[in-house]
Length: 382
Image (cartoon, rainbow, N blue to C red; front, side):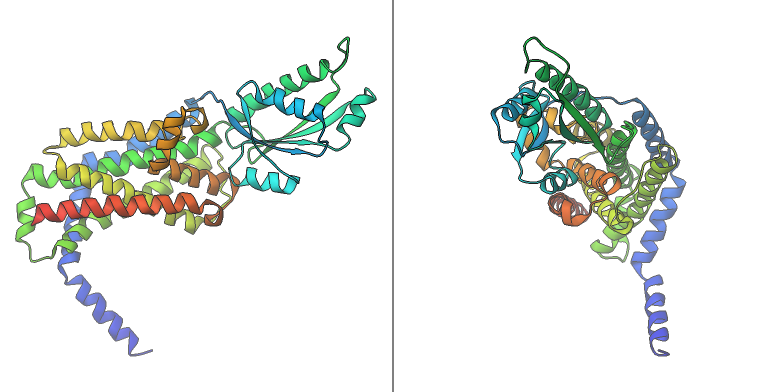
């Protein structure tokens, strides 16, 4: 044990004397002297999260619905057809049990679930009320409210046509809202806005930090320092990464204390995935800075890139409401996957075991973007 302490102390001493430590300290001092950068890190994320969290309200179509039909009768199939013909719901899958249906809703594959009991036709033939159960994912409170209103209206209309002349409704829906029982709209919007804010901040801050070297003419001075390319890159990326992780914690704290947003997942894993997404934003920012000639070009190009990312991510409006072409393009959008991960962690309480596809795609995009940006930046240095 006594040998390990001197070895560790010697390693720390060598690190503090290295070029990487000197460059990182220089970068941190520059960041804290740059008031514009500090402003970008704190003020816009706070204001955007507050405004979007309170103000947004989208429309929805094509909500995915799973069906458990224990009755297996023409009348039960007519009820499913009545629910799906208005384009609010689409019957995606049929299941043999409620457990299967509930698991698919929990995974986020379905927005609603319909359970038709085996005694459905028996009650109808006796002119007795026949209850059906409708599960609705309440994570998107706005969509859940719309779905509830349409479903209740359609079922009531359907039941009145079962008798001649129409009498009281025979089919009585029991609606259960999952994950967001109070249908609080901010619970849907705030996680999406957290992803949007992190995207805008990480891209702009990382691009500004690199382009500043060009504007001030200090890029040539970096070439004169007795440091390797990877040390210069690490000194640029690591301080920005840590500051952006602080933004993640700031957004999480605001969501919890201002919007009463629950956190039902694993915090270390959430921070790990957020760090992975920060690598995506930093990669985009550095890549833009290597191609741009000045800060104005960086800001305009970032705006051009970020707007489509936000619009096709599902952070503001559900992806199901988009045309098929944009739903396909959304699979290549890193923000779409990060928003799905955030909502899964915060609201549904699921982990990487359920969200692994989104984490995998996000990791691949992060490696590609960060690899391209590092290669381009090293090429500029050489």
